[in-house]
Amino acid sequence: MSDKALYQQKKEAEIAIWKSEIVKLKAKASLASADAQIEMNKHIDALEKKIDEGKTKLSDLIKATDEMYESMKTNVESVWDSVKTAFNDAASKIKS
Image 1 (cartoon, one colour):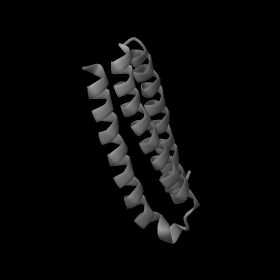
Image 2 (cartoon, rainbow, N blue to C red; image 1 turned 90 degrees about the horizontal axis):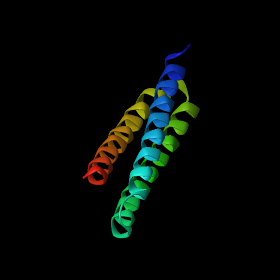
Image 3 (cartoon, rainbow, N blue to C red; image 1 turned 60 degrees about the vertical axis):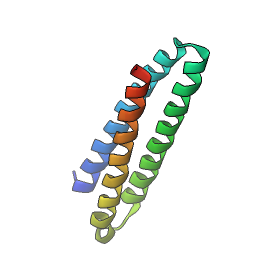
């Protein structure tokens, strides 16, 4: 399997983990008061948008030529870091 395919597989696994964590966050939010649910859902929505951005960047990377792959990979990693930060922020705000 090529490096590109392995990288894609790894990132898709991370997306699957994030999606399962979002399900847990939504369940927790559903148990909160109405005002808290509104606030929690804002964080969850922002997180889902970040994940969608990551999926788009990953898709672009997979379509890239081998020459463009390495430079685009740095961009994907940057977006991934942003998603991780957003996820940690949302999770900490919802768990509090």
